[in-house]
Image (cartoon, rainbow, N blue to C red; front, side, top):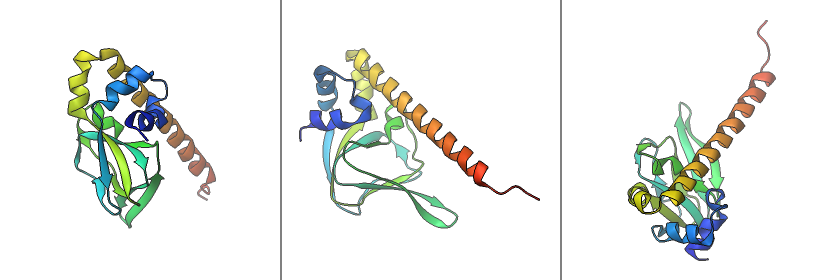
Length: 154
């Protein structure tokens, strides 16, 4: 699978033209990640986003009762996208559950592309915002369901 094909599988790039995909393929780094190796660790500063090309990535978060699995991501799924928009602390850890190939898009490369390809960068930033908005709405519904299922206090 080419880098362009891998990008095309991601929800963030589904509305991109072949030209737009090639723009980001030119700055995407392909990385092989052995099983058990971290892509990033909770509380570190995020400087890149990742798209899973092959394999699976386990997303976890530390809590009072130890590490908790939040998701297992497979080909076409992305993680850490907010890091493209600015450096922030990672809220979760991501570790290769199986041997993986990932695409890494670094914030510095995204920033370097902005003056050269502003429309493509804006399109990606808007896709990240839309994806985040959908995840917030999904979380809100989950919380409503949990609150409704909670027994009332006597």
